[in-house]
Image (cartoon, rainbow, N blue to C red; front, side, top):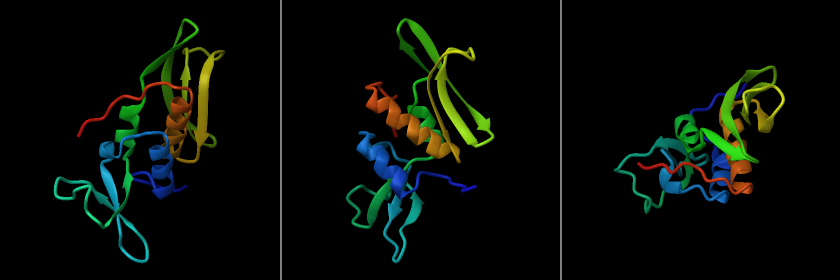
Length: 132
């Protein structure tokens, strides 16, 4: 199983395509030939730095973006996540086994949360705002 501390370059590009503000990222990908390296974002590293080639989000930052609950057709659906036989699942359900609004499964939790953010933005749900 792939272990990550933050989104990889592909996941980061997908988040940006969803409209996630790059200022909410807590990591940056810095140019370091032949492969970029992940660096903790600090006040010293400014967005205008020419060596920044992308942004990265930690699991904590990603989870902070997810609404804790959603309302759909008069029902509240709570955010639930945990391990399963395939890796990790993230879902919104009404805490019964019958009513899932949406469920994603992925090998690692960061990928599962990125997929949920993609679904939320496709369905026009508002993500929580992140401030530095």
